[in-house]
Structure formats: structure tokens, C-alpha cells
Length: 203
Image (cartoon, rainbow, N blue to C red; front, top):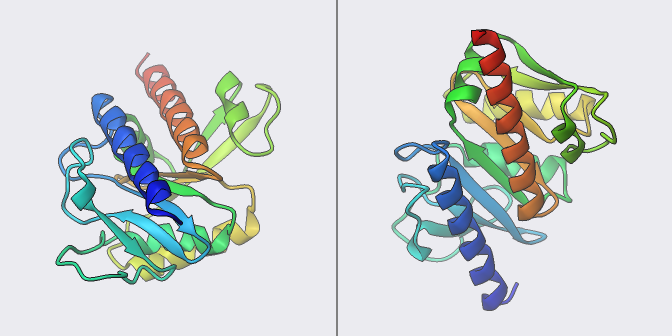
């Protein structure tokens, strides 16, 4: 990828971070983002940075195993392996986004999966052409052993090849798409539906 295209990807992820922060989805240093630069190169947010205040220095280039390419003192996110798992499992993936909203955190603590049914916005997810559908967003138990967690996600994705998002209990949402724009749309739509589910449970 050319420097111009890489810079465009960085700008797009900075913009995404600012938008997500405005919605309260990436508090403190929570969340992490990535985008594909080439078949074997990824752009990844560095560990410890505020996703609503990203700068160009907050991005690293890695291989598909999460190994840093180039010389830097920065480290990749502890959860890099969850990003690379998606890129390997679905080679067409262009971006992976991870956020920590109140709605996704609360819902993921209460149930083993989140059932979304009857929402118009379901149509942003793969294979859905009508609101008259039900989608199950799986919830995986939180685990500090990232390779073990990634393996559980990978097994689920083998059984559900159209999966475009999942939750980690008490931790947050991972969503992805063929492009960064598609990943953003899916994440925003899911967060809207999670908020609706949370509000319904309060009523």
C-alpha cells in the first residue's frame, strides 16, 4: 500500500475514534482498531492510547500474526490476537473495530448471547435482507489468555461463516467488515440495537 493510502487509513481510524468517543463507546484507553493495508500487513492502534485522541504516532504496522514491522518503542494492544484471528478466518476483512459501550457491556454480562429481532438495521449485517429476521450475537467469556479466547472465537466462526460481530462478557464488542466504512456501519447499527435492547429491559 502506498504512503497516501496508509495515511488515508490512519485518518479514517482517527475519525472513527473521535466519533466513537463522542458516543461514549471508547472510555479512557478502552477499545482498539485495525485496518488491512495489504494481504499480509495490518494497521493497528498501539497499546495505551486514548481512541478519541489518536494521532499518527499511535499506529503500528504488523503482520498477520501481530508482529510489529519497523522500529518503534510502542507496543501493540494486548488483544491484537483477536484482530488477527478475524483477518485469518475471513480473508476479505478490511477492518476490525472494538469498543466498550455501556449497552454492550451490560448486555454481555447478563446473557450468553444477544438476540436481535425485527430491527430495520439488521440489514447492515451479512446475509440479512429484511427486518423480519433474528440475529444472534454470541457472547464469549472474558479470558486474559488471548490465544485461548481467539481459538474459541475461531471455532465458532468456522460453524457460523457469516458472523460479523461478537461480544466478550463485561468487556465489549468486536465488529468487522470488508471495508472500514462497512465495519463502522455495522458497529454503529449494533450499538443502536443494543441500546434499544437495554432500554426495553429497563421498561
